[in-house]
Length: 465
Image (tube, rainbow, N blue to C red; front, side, top):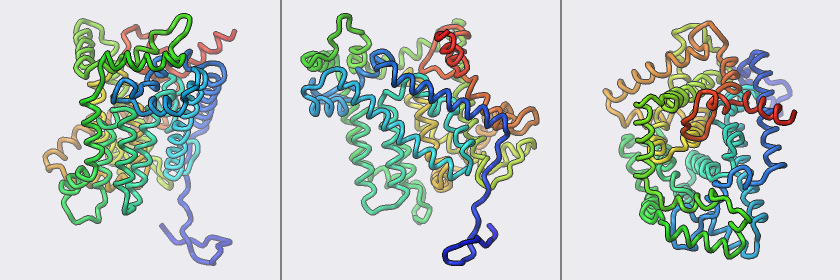
């Protein structure tokens, strides 16, 4: 960057001016700002007019899993609620859950906003990324901000920040945060721990080989791994679930004139094994073979398209001048290639969740949101250097060809590498028109389209009139 005099400098020094922000077309800016206002209106309406029992009764039950039936997975948050509020009723417990959920979502949103605004220098591009399908509009539209997902995401963000600063006691802090997250929900151990191990091995100043650095970082995360193993062994059963329900019933929770069974089903899900969830997924695959192709076709398209949108957003770095209308730029652009590589690696870390659980929308959200902490920060280069250094040349070649075959054609759908549309305008269209269901659906295409932002807005306006 050329040295340029900054007028009014306190020390009268020559300092480099910040690079200019990437520009956004007027249609994309208007569509993005309008979408942000609509999502914010949905959030305010949900908080002001509804309670958890109306929005997400199953999620409430998940928060109330405690250790009153013995040590069990997902029980830390509920045990804290049980211990700290011995005389609280249902309404007070709901308020605590809502307040803590809003706090976790807000902290994650603020951190992502900070990273993106530094990366692009544009508030519009920052909103354009944040509102992409299965990112931060998804928890609000599907009422998933009242869930433990944002707590896990916040724990990962905090751990990544601590690892990046290189503090002497960083692994003590990371293990402490990770243990709390694992005791809150076991999915943290399946996906976030592998990512933390790779991030911890990322400093390239270390002279050891990448494989040794990764092995050393895994060893330093041993307390978290042991906690994860304990949670997998003590996953719970029907007897433990009944004891937890009974402990809350003694305090007036779960007691309504007509109790909603979904409150209890979240607690009783403790008795479900990983094999049962996998068998349900296998039944879905068999149903697709029988002609029900809507569900697998949607997710096979939704997952890579959502990732490609983030790869395109990575091109619009502060000071960059991308030329997306030239096809050669699509896979030769360095930011695009690095972003696609990062998303491929993080996608491998989150792949177990897609086998063990049917809430595909949640897993895509966690995957993409976690990837933001790598793709749009200075961790990206060292992260890729470590992973690529641990791979054999043939594995790197296969991975590169796979990314070219997958992300190249999909990027053309957004106008990147073609001349049919501006990529940012196409990304604004996906915010409005891309369906975002929470889990596997088995209905028709009309029902699927109802999960898009424009359909939700039309439905809300029609309901009021």
